[in-house]
Length: 363
Image 1 (tube, rainbow, N blue to C red):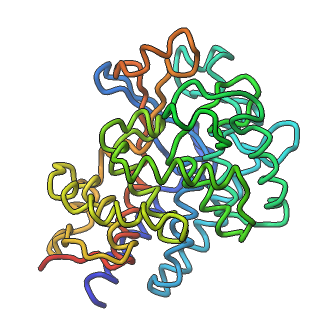
Image 2 (cartoon, helix red, strand yellow; image 1 turned 180 degrees about the horizontal axis):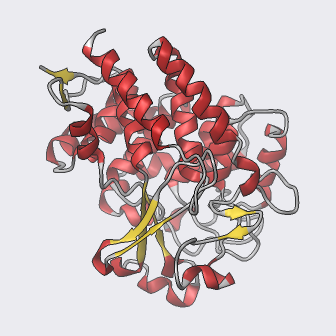
């Protein structure tokens, strides 16, 4: 078996082994992840649907190009992952999804403080909902219904944004949250996931979709994602992560031709300057997705354990806790107020994605 096919098979086998069979922290089918604040030596097991849905979606996208045995493993991973989704569905029965378990509610699990206060129980969010819908486009997930739901909670409909680029605060842009009491927030990575779902369902573009696309386009083409990643994407907040999400959409959205061109211009230099393996991998994957060449990042002599070691430490998303409420928002850039999340299985899925898209192993 060629080296790339061998590594892909090993990656899928390892991802399958990391999927929970059920324990004190995780429901069967979930992928373990951790929330952390390194400066405070804070680390907790964190059961959420976000990473499981992201892994299921990613593996589904790769499946047709995986070795046959790996495809059979992916089918099992997908079935087990999807079976967890009802635990995260809105308790009133509407098909939106929460980052954290809702039935019963279990926000910020395994901690001593945040999970005890309802103020930190976030409403259903666009990111988790988009990934669940992308990875499980079944009959209970009606595209027209979700499209209308996005409109009902968007900027100018339910309220007005007080953060994000000032020139866009009067535009019809989707918010990060479905709740009535959370502030309107713009996050271009979240918007990219929502509009990727929109694109996959061939929905017509309206003013909300066009304005949301316009914000993504401006953030990338102006370089704002490099100058102020926290302002552009509060829940991802690094240039490689923003580029990864915007590039995934731009590869399929002709309206983002300028975004595509800007990423192709910017990413080689960002990749060359980045000291972190997973940042390089995100940037290289984006280049490959957009049809450009990318340097080999893996050594064909590395065993799986060596690859896995290099994937550790990717903080794929963050929560700037002080950004939730207007009185504390001015402190949101204080890094000690940020909680980050990492998921070992998702990092391995990203390596598999890089290889399937044409990433090379140096010999």
